[in-house]
Length: 240
Image 1 (tube, helix red, strand yellow):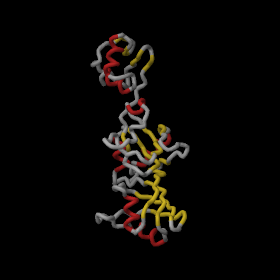
Image 2 (cartoon, helix red, strand yellow; image 1 turned 180 degrees about the vertical axis):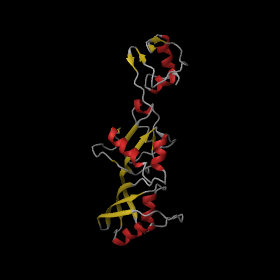
Image 3 (cartoon, helix red, strand yellow; image 1 turned 90 degrees about the vertical axis):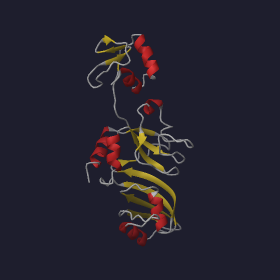
Image 4 (cartoon, one colour; image 1 turned 90 degrees about the horizontal axis):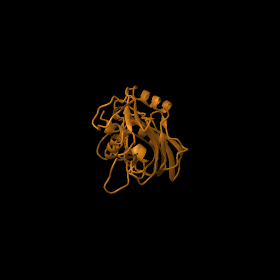
């Protein structure tokens, strides 16, 4: 990797600022001073130091966010603030993106990473990675609704969903439920309830595969995944 790209990615400034550091003689590779921004280094083997500080290279970042309503699940948007906009600069430099999407008014667990391979595996229909949601529903959810979801429901575009697991937490004029789906169709949970004559008035994602939302995170807060969480998430993609 080019020296200027490596150091810019690790938060040592823009490429222009890195060039200034190089000119100042602040950067060494394996103990030897370098001044060319285009020099290539092996980020896994070479020892790069800036003003005597060893650069710890990281390729990937994995973030768990408690997404608040009002943000769109995208890296950029011309009209609305995105989930990436609220990341700290030291995390944004890794150029993470949301794995899948939560609707603008939906909150809860959102994974952001720059690991395209893992993201693809988690979203692959072949992997059947389950996603658990909590929802408030306008209308009384009954055993009949549970059976309809178990069979799969036909959406407004004619698509028949895969079976979903529906659990009633509280039934009434406004019901509270948990639902587990293994797909990620556009507005899927909302459209599934619309298909049976009901309306979702609140939606929150609680889990994706083995990754559970850390309830200590306030809306809009995020943290890096632990090694154990990441390991289990990778194992989720090996199931089919």
